Image 1 (tube, rainbow, N blue to C red):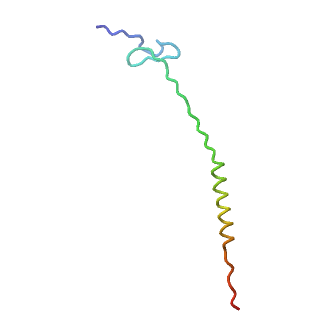
Image 2 (spheres, helix red, strand yellow; image 1 turned 180 degrees about the vertical axis):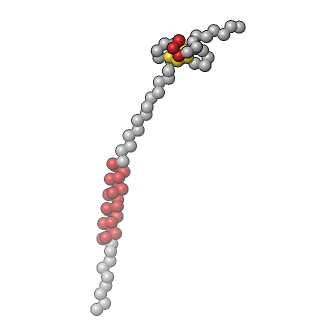
Image 3 (tube, rainbow, N blue to C red; image 1 turned 120 degrees about the horizontal axis):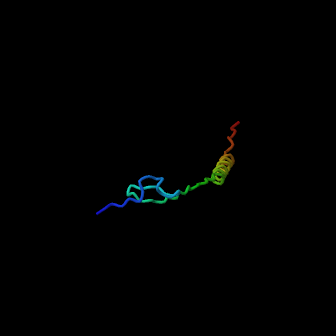
Length: 69
């Protein structure tokens, strides 16, 4: 059984291919970049509003000290 080699070097293959370990030309895999955009504006606004509202509630619940004299 004779092993047929399609290529020995990358230069033996086409421009968009490379020579694999099986001595055959393979096309380069397409690598896609996933871009993740994190928008933290809405969560920051919710937390900010909750802090302000809790401060207003605590301020309103404050009981004035009684004067005994």
